[in-house]
Length: 583
Ligand SMILES: [Zn+2]
Image (cartoon, rainbow, N blue to C red):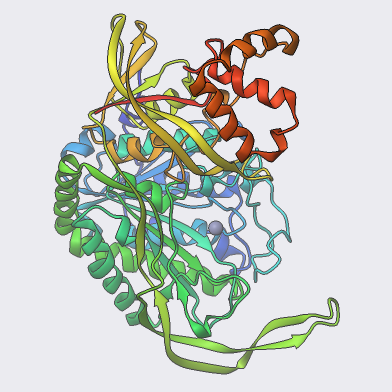
């Protein structure tokens, strides 16, 4: 199987008809042509990038991968050395920066700002020197179906543009919850691209919701506490400080993403816990730095696009300055990961230690709503304030596991195998029938969301009984997956059922939660009467009946309990998590 069609696709040489900064400079964007009132449509966006490709020899536009809308994704490579072959780019040591726009096409600022950014850096006479150590890849519109579903009004809180795309993709999926479960073709194409391209830094552009405050730009980084050392230090200190400083120098002061809905920032707020379903959590699994822009929805569209453009320059300048440090930090993080055996798989906000954040806000007040009759939060923009507020920046570990030497993943659950393959996980099919000593999990309890969430009935609060046993495994029935590989952290967080975004929690293994065979009471009752002659089983039945009052007078419940003690019960299947560990 060819896992890297993208290599071949981009290996095609991009020819540019001419090369001079003036022609690049004259390429107006739809945003500019509309006097900053419109965001480019999907067709206009792709056309603009194709026009840029014709104008600049440093730009290559290629389609790759499917989307649920039936149209391909596009990627634009910008490389001063004019190499557009992903395979050879990997070898030349440049820093790789991936920019992803339009994941939520109702939040289109980055779609337009990326065009302006590319044009500005390419029309700079110093481009070849300035961007000598960085290759940029831009996905102009990730959620193609959402971009095509253009409308005037689905962003109730947003100040422009006049029309924009929709949050859900062609299947109404939120792609920024889809990086691990990968229900959408968009996500599957993205994952394959990400694994192939292995970017050092990933930027995704958004528009925020929530509280009101004066800042246009807020930003979010892969949570430093979750990053592998020394990336945690680089992101938490150097990168964060550089971005804040460079935005301030552009007279566009920003603040960490204001993670508040329904309450004002006066008494502080916490950082965002980015589990791997979100992009910044997903990139962290690969020791890649995730960065998100979240412009404030109530600021005018023009102001938001300009702020996103400022951020692109601020990040670009930071990456130019820090390219060597980032690559070195990443290499060390890979080394750390190779030695790492214990992994935190779930976190929570640490409320015991807050940092002081200098914040500019608007006076919040409550007034009785004429509609609901209840107190309603409002903001008074004529009454700004400035003070130190609490910022709960840190996470604390909730659950830890030790990585095994190998995972054994059943081939029959091909949807899981497919996702691991997209992530370039190395695995081999069991070559012959064998018996192995494994650690196995029996799911003893879990909760399930009563409402569908992103096309799943999500599980959480999973607990398991752990046991060690010899299991007979048939040839070709299992993939042997060494944990010691680049995807080590991804494997742990996808295959350990207590990790919040584990495949188990996204219903990929729900088959094992259902019992397949049953019994007729009139047939089993005589056998059950023999079973209770066993003192141990009789004692267990008493404990069960005592603990579960509903079963006390329920004959079927008692028989069902005894059935579970009998040889008929499918104890190697029912509630047995089918992924095994070899320690
Ligand atoms: Zn968004």
